[in-house]
Length: 379
Image 1 (cartoon, rainbow, N blue to C red):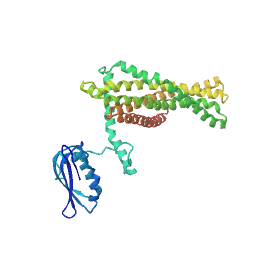
Image 2: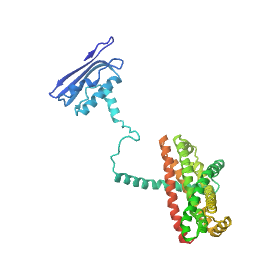
Image 3: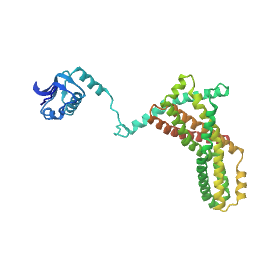
Image 4: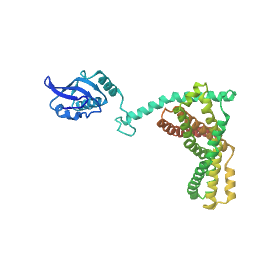
């Protein structure tokens, strides 16, 4: 096969060598500005009992067109399990082919199926949890040290950032907290009424809603809302700063990212979540009042007196303690995942998701521990 060109021509010749061997000889100029042949033209010869391929070259010039031809030819040989000897190729071609083959094949997200078993994936997840433990403890230690600097007045923090985070975590969250708390209070009232009606004690709906909202549900729902709303925002903001290398810039300037970025967010949630817990409890009690007076025929003053009699200071203290703990773990989770974020846009999304999952998991664990703890203390 050959082609004449007014500048120079390429030539391709094949010949049998040593029984089942095939030699391919390249001569002339092999560049993309010429109509180079397709490697598929050699498919018939490669299928004719060939088990070895060698090359012979005498090229005046070559470019990526020749490299593409050889690459496709090598793939044909691989499909037919033909051994290829590359010694006859130019040194530059062999080096480029080696570099291309050494580069890892990038797998697009969502493509292909994993061959790993369920047991293997579960084991890998458990190992990842154990590996993540020291990092979480180390981050917690840095936060404790930062709080000690805050207590001694040696902190390097912009107080304007703190008030901004307080506004973001508190007043701007009132609407969603109001809606969720009202609906939860409504559910508690209906649930209690359905059970208490069987014994003629519907007046105790007030006790159920008041104690349930103040001690448990108000703090728990507020913590979950803040985890989804504010915790994920913390992770996304810090993750974006990690991608833009802004956190590295803080360290280069000798400024602690924990003091400057993490501590204001921690303090803001520790201050705001207990207040939001009280507000959520009040909204839930109002929802119970509305349902009790309009649906179940309980008088307004009866409901009020029953609620006041059911609640005491210990209930409010339990709710405030739980709200403080939930706010702390949400801020911790969001800042931890944000500081651990990778260096690309996908990592930012993964950090936000991980922050919500970690926050809700820690809220659930701490809720269980605190409930048992207060029960054992008789509070």
